[in-house]
Every structure is written in structure tokens, then in C-alpha cells.
Image 1 (cartoon, rainbow, N blue to C red):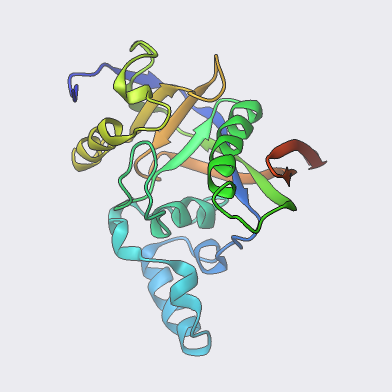
Image 2: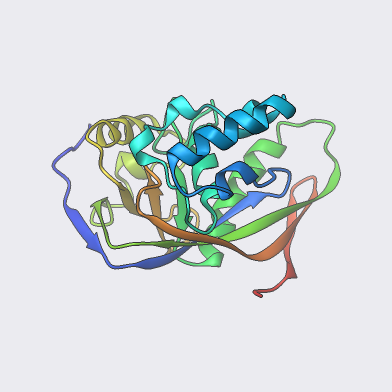
Length: 230
């Protein structure tokens, strides 16, 4: 059942956390400009000498031009989440558009990524022992209003641990209505809160705050801090 009459909760400027694999390099062209017009010029110049640039930037058509965030710290991280989309989808996306997920603490962000890494890596039969490094991105949001799911019970379909179909329909409807995102309780870290941003518009800053190493040995055995906060 899809409930669109959800409460909307105002959120004061907050700080959240997200982990991404270090194999995803920053896209410098996003960080080098402050406006879409400057991006157009720089992208055209760089594309002449870097044929891989289009693949690195991703599909810009997935993000409306008036939602681009350029000129903020970490603009490349904010934009990449919406121009490089996981075709398998996520809790609030069926794979047709991007979502930027953050947790209220590093513990919540780690719990979320550990769950998804476990599911993915168990389907890689040749993977026996490996170390993977993840950047923790400290993300600051401006004052925002989000659809609020925190009042719904844990048994609600939006909180199903593996079946995201109802939550994906909700996400698509909210995105079509140009809502900023969703506040919900973390399914992987009891007591944690997450935000699913359906647009980068509310992001004011993203910086790498620490580096973590996830150890896989026929299952995730540990998550270790490599470099602490600067």
C-alpha cells in the first residue's frame, strides 16, 4: 500500500555520513566550475582531449539542470550520485534515477554499507579474501523539508529488509513531485536515522572525513579505521 499523505518534517541544517568505494575517483570537472554555463564550456574543452570524460561524468540527462549543484565543496560527489545510477536500484529508486543516502552517524553509515556489501560480495564466487577501502563523506545539508517515515512501524512495507518495491514507488512519486527526500529509520542500525535525498539541491558541502577498510574473508570480518578525521 502506498501512502502519499505522509507528514513533512522540517530539518534544520544537519550533518550526515555516507561511505563510497575508493574505486570511484572524484570527477574534477564538477569541482572546477561554479555554474552550469561554466561547466558547459569546460566540459566541451576537456572532452576534446579526454575521450573518457563522458563516461566519468555519467548521464547528465538523469538530473534536471536546475538541480545541478556546482561551486560547493564536494560538488563532484553530490553530482555523481545522480549521474551514475545503480541499475539494480535501491530502497527508494528502481534504478531509473539516483538517490544520495546518508546516515546520522558513521556507525549508521557503516552498518548500511556493510549490509549491502555482504549481499553483493556473496554473489562473487571467486572472492575469498580481500580488503576494500571506503571513503566516509561528511555531508552537510541546509534547512530542508522531508517526507517523514519515522512514525511508521518497523513492520511497514517501506521498512522491509529486502523487498523495496513499495518504497521504490513512493520514491518515484515523491521525486515526480520534486520533493527533496525522505527521513526514515535505519533498517541496519537500530536507533539510527537515514535520509534519502532525491535531489542534491539541499546539499551545501561534502568532504572526505575518514578512510575505512572492510575486510572480506568469506564474509565481512571487520571494518577498520585507516585514517581518522582530519
